[in-house]
Amino acid sequence: MKLVTYRSGVEAEARLGAVVNDLVIDVEDLGAANGEEMPCSMLELIDSGRPGLAALQALVDQAGDTPPIHTAEALSNVTLLAPIPRPRKNIWGIGLNYVEHVAESAKTLDTSKDLPDKPVLFTKPPTSVIGPGGAIDHDANMTAQLDWEVELAVIIGSSAKKIRKQDALDHVFGYSVMIDVSARDNRRSGQWIFSKGQDTYAPFGPCIVTADEIPDPHNLVLWLTVNGVEKQRGNTRNMLFKVDHLIADISTGMTLEPGDIIATGTPEGVGAGRSPQEWLWPGDVVVAAVEGIGTIRHPVVNATTEQP
Image 1 (tube, helix red, strand yellow):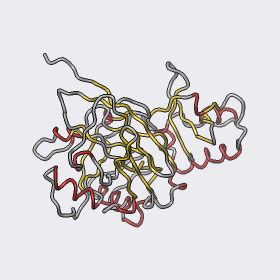
Image 2: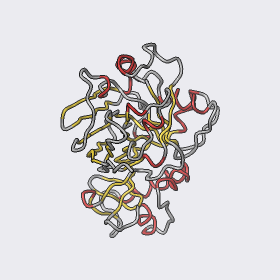
Image 3: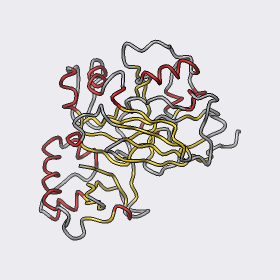
Image 4: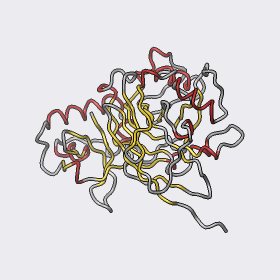
């Protein structure tokens, strides 16, 4: 299934929907039409586990191309939000997880040219998340080196603590698209969280595709353009540490919980790695996509504030 969080109007509340063809079927309304109580948010659905997801799938299959009246509307008529508009915890970020990106980063970002022997971890706070179409802030008082990174996002479906690599994918709820926006000149003594965790630095969407529809997350094309010019194109098969490895590694010391998000790293082509280097500026438009999931588009806007 393709699952979205959406809003019908400017003042409407966020709703959970399932995308079928060109329609968004409201999950709560679909349940009510069938005399069943269904989750009203993505996190509630994730918390309901496999039984909840199976119940929703059965209702969607039953509805087919003709869902009950007043339960669906055209996808083109709704506003998509981030699939999880406000994550409960920080997003896990993975640095230097593609060979070519390791090489380009070593040239310009003072990182090691050697491949890491363990995943490189950082986090982005919940306040960094924006949904499809949301504006990426460019504050000239904060950065002159705003950069892009397209990534496959993994959404955890069940708690994972000290799990085996061979069991790791059983804990995945689904997959989405994320742009890891980075202010390269905001790293502090080697720490990345301020560089990567500022407001609007985690564009996320347009949907979550459930794990059953992507049995192999390691053969997906991902790409990114700036102002219509392709900057990145790669394949998740080239990850140094695959999704199962990342989940197993993080879970050795910290419990992964339902709704947690892992952004799995980016292929080569970031602005910092180019010659000459390229950066995002107000007026730019960034588009990112992962095969089988979807595309997100984000303008960069001037968010510079007056200095006191």
